[in-house]
Image (tube, rainbow, N blue to C red; front, side, top):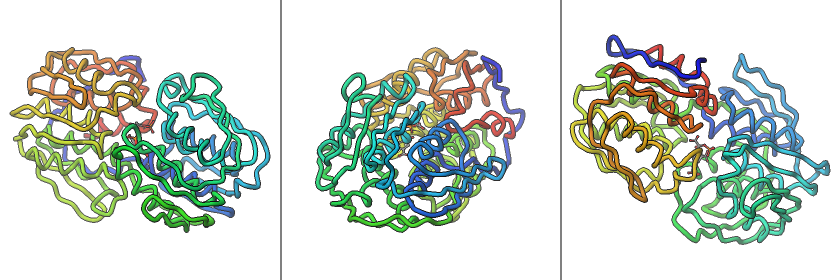
Length: 417
Ligand SMILES: O=C(O)C1=C[C@@H](OP(=O)(O)O)[C@@H](O)[C@H](O)C1
Ligand SMILES: C=C(OP(=O)(O)O)C(=O)O
């Protein structure tokens, strides 16, 4: 891929059916649950991208044996009870928030010292609420650099019990603790001290855990054993948002296969927003079709549950007939980059009137000028801003390779439109 990628405008409205790659969130949950389940699990529909390579490396470091077949989107996991693992481990979570936040509590189950680190980008993202909670639950956590950030060294076993946890920064702390919960001697009871963001991800955590034989009861997990199983991973709903958005802004039709009303991922609800804006949406249990109607109206929406699609919506909003306001997403300032500032800065670079507030942004429709967009090493900046290039000429994406975090074949799929 070139250092700067020129996006080719669509020559005609698309009419295609696509199956996006496997869900990052489900892949990383299934890999961890399988690694904690003694015996053999076979995962199919696996996403192979930087974030899931990070988790593959992590579960290996924690003692699982993996047989990987990328061509078949399959990983066979031979899991082990982490409480029997006495070898020190080193984990590189790379840029992956899920890997870092899920592996730190899993490492605390092992009666051995595990060092968990990540890229400079991940080192800048918060871990303090998670490491504080694990100390409270009986693990030893050493801050190896700045307190509250990676790298850390974690030594178990963690006893479990009751713990208070803030919910407003990230749901990943809670998901990570819940997945470790069944293997804590006293189980786990979490009390949230602030409102939880990204709620559907916690529901997805409980659903994947259930597939591996353990039950979550609200924010309580009793001591239980994971059971190895075969598990089919659904396509990535956040990835699907770009493809569905393309239909809405082009007056075309895109069907996403493998994702519908039965999906575990909150981000399938992005289609609801396109519908509110004026697109036509048809849904079955495992398929969503969006048809652009030529008319898009601005909306005012709280995206705290589905914030990974906020930048996608910002791109769609450019082509509406009235302003769009997105609220409830102040916490996305601590993702791969400050996503509120980044999306507003880049839309303004293209001459679009976009303004940020503490909690979100407002986009006023306009015609984007030819622009080489900066992407801040954030895959979602690259994928969202590329959508503008489907409608107007002269759009370029700097550092397009950053899409490899979750969707390495993104520009190939975009070209299929
Ligand atoms: O649990 C998950 O799989 C995720 C939770 C969300 O993060 P936050 O809970 O930090 O908002 C989301 O942005 C991320 O891409 C994946
Ligand atoms: C925020 C994201 O990822 P993570 O937190 O898992 O690094 C994302 O994929 O947009």
